[in-house]
Length: 102
Image (cartoon, rainbow, N blue to C red; front, side, top):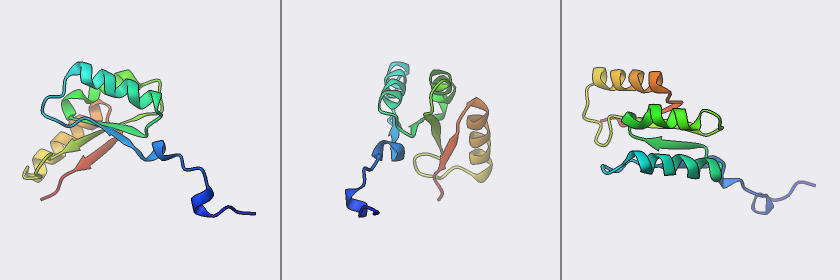
C-alpha cells in the first residue's frame, strides 16, 4: 500500500542550499557555514565566488556541493563578464552556478 504524500517522511535537508551572500561574509563565517551544511546534510552551500576554493577544500570529503552566484546581485554584468566569472568559479571547485540575468 502506498502512503499519501502527506504521510511520507520528507527529507527536506536534501533541498536546502545553506547560503551566505551578505557583503560582510568572512572566512570564519564560511567555515561555520560549511560545518553546519555537513552536520545537517544540506544539499549545498551557496557563497560568493571569492570563497569557492575555500569551501571546496573544506567540503571535499563530504556530499555537500559548492554553489556560487554569477552577476550577483543585479545581473547587470556583461555576458563576457558572467562567462569569465562562471569559468573561474568552476575552476575553483564550484559544483553549481546560480546566474542572475538582466
